[in-house]
Length: 130
Image (tube, rainbow, N blue to C red):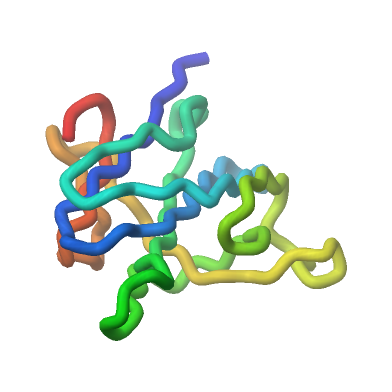
């Protein structure tokens, strides 16, 4: 089966901490936390199954003295402790499994330079270009 990868590009002036997720039918997987520096791109979710929906949750790093920026949406997935790498299968019963839940925004993978659907604050996501 074909697989895609998700590229995270940070066009803000903030260091962002990012978690990514995909959903295909009842199967889902969440990975994080990836640090994306201003003006750089990082590859996340390297093996997204063909036809899966991709999602992202990003938060500005705690080192910033300004208000925290949060890029999220309405799709809830499980995440691990911030600052630690994690991979979580499934998005239900997060607390029972020792995780917390966070809201993720859907990512369009169809455009030539895909972006998060409801977010336009400078975090660009997509296939191989950024």
